[in-house]
Image (cartoon, rainbow, N blue to C red):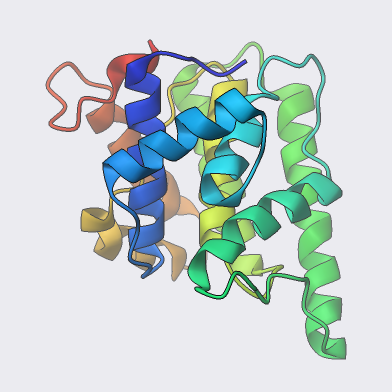
Length: 217
């Protein structure tokens, strides 16, 4: 089960808000998101970006649980609806023939990567190595763009889950770091994305972090 303290609620609220800002979406306030987290947890429902993080957080301690293709589609569907004021979303997998082929090939890569990570990398590795592995996954997922929308927000939610699965503190993808984040994803390899992950992870989990993200330790 995910942590239940106020620090965790504050972290998840900020994680969601910054992820949406990074995607160019005007988010709700910290207070509104925090209230939504509390309400959804008490009612046992999953809706929107909050529901996606709660859904993934609840899976962290399930032994040998794999993030399957259908679950990733569910997470994307929950998150994608946030960007549309009428409650609809074009989040379903791409339908054009060429894009569908691309989507299938991309799916093979990121479904396999996340399952392999959970089977082989949860134990016997240093936290820094795990962060690098998740960065590789994030790079592959975002560049594959398997869904019609919300690929970045879905990838960030999955990165949050994978780090927690590996007993590593997750970090927030701050919108103020957009330049470094976006530039790293335009590179032909994941090297700069790995550097971005390591920088943010170290900064936010240091004793002198201006963001104060050590609440999960």
